[in-house]
Image (tube, rainbow, N blue to C red; front, side, top):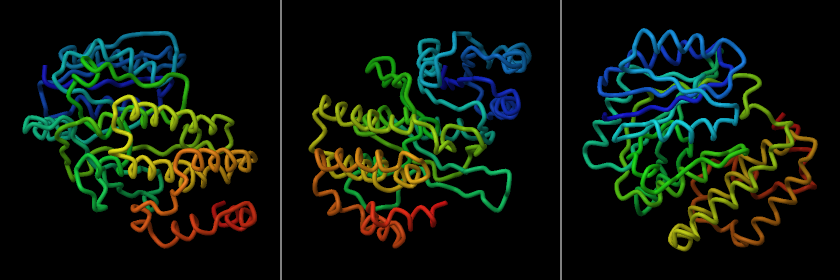
Amino acid sequence: MKVSVIVPMFNVENYVEQCLDSLSRQTLRDMEVILVDDGCTDNTPLIADKYVTKYPERFRMVHKKNGGLSDARNYGIPYAKGQYLAFLDSDDWVEPPLYEKLSAQMDQGCDVCLTDIEYYFEDPSKRYVMKGLSSWPAETMQKKALLSPMFAWNKMYKAEFFRRDGWRYPLHTWYEDTPVSAPVLATAKNIGYLPECLIHYRQREGSIMADTSSPRLVEIFGVMMMLRTAFHRLGLYEQYYDELEYLHVEHLRLYGMFRFLRSSQWRYYYERSEDTMRNNFPNWRRNRYLRNLNAKNRLFLNCFNPGTARLFQAVIR
């Protein structure tokens, strides 16, 4: 088996059919799809079972008690038979040639291959493409990849990262992709890039990434600590210090702060971010990658503080 795709499912009856249709139409024949029923309480498993029945050579479904996205991904990994491994969220969908093209890149000797993403909104005017690999200058592909989106599902991996090296997604936390994607990219010897947009990332109200009021926003601080710990354990902290510093700026001082400012607890999050940066990256304002940001983001980093918070809150909202 060449490719295994793991699809966690939880109460997505309105979206899962489009996801599974897209997987049934993949041009790569030597692949399997492992559907993980994460304790669904709606009709998702019934819909999925139709695909298992119709395409038994492609789809398998396993069932478990609800444990969240990470737990469902982790649960599916031991069932995967493929040489290469990929993940797909069950409310997203992919174009027919995606996994054939990614696996062809992997066959050229890649350990990981990245690809582009469409942020899909119901309103066509809001849709846009995010590049899977940063265009910013960096000395190695590993460093460029660490400056790129950390999503688990716009990548294909050698399965050994999960079988031999034992990588698993952290449980009971948001932002679970980063503490796995980043060290995997840092330890990959060869990284490929498919510069095509064949994945559609559905943006919907009520999703985790759309929620800016939840107290679970605080979990980003624990996730970033996991990231620092992983790089220390691997002996790669100093080698990738600049990239780790930038990731902390991005998640705690820039795009993460935009989310914090929409919360009534923004001041607490701001103080936590100040403490984290002061204790780990005290000179973050001189990070060499910040010059690549657009003028608006550089202005925000330079000017945001509790005294200017109301102004920026008005702009962001």
